[in-house]
Image (cartoon, rainbow, N blue to C red; front, side):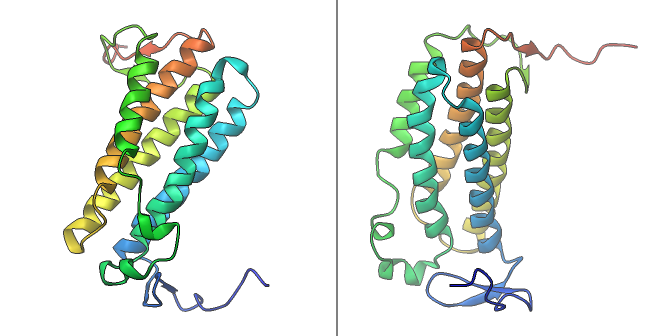
Length: 192
């Protein structure tokens, strides 16, 4: 099977169910952002690697990557076609996904110092990769919200993306703490 089909050469792509749309359609933008987020998580996982101190994140982020495949498929499928999705996509996102992210946030937060200031993204390589993933997740959430204003999307997706960005922020802080890398608080602009 060849990777190229030439069907997108005129600037169109196919949604799940066969409908053809322009590649800048809000639905394509929404699931494209999910793909970018999933790539960022793959990179973060490669940075985390075999660091035993960060093992907790490997299972969590791998599960999130799998869930993001479901999110992408749901965003790529117009509402009228969602009932025709095949397994595992037909079940949608597990109902407890957002609650699970909250539990993981709470677990990681137990070992973190309370936030007193905004923090600048960065720190350890893993923390930096997770901060980047968090920013991409926020963009994905904005695109999903934009799509939901024009077309109905599956229930729970926006909540999930909102919770995931909080999870990734907390994971970045947690990874930095495990690496003994102090966060840089944002204290405002210094007069030069």
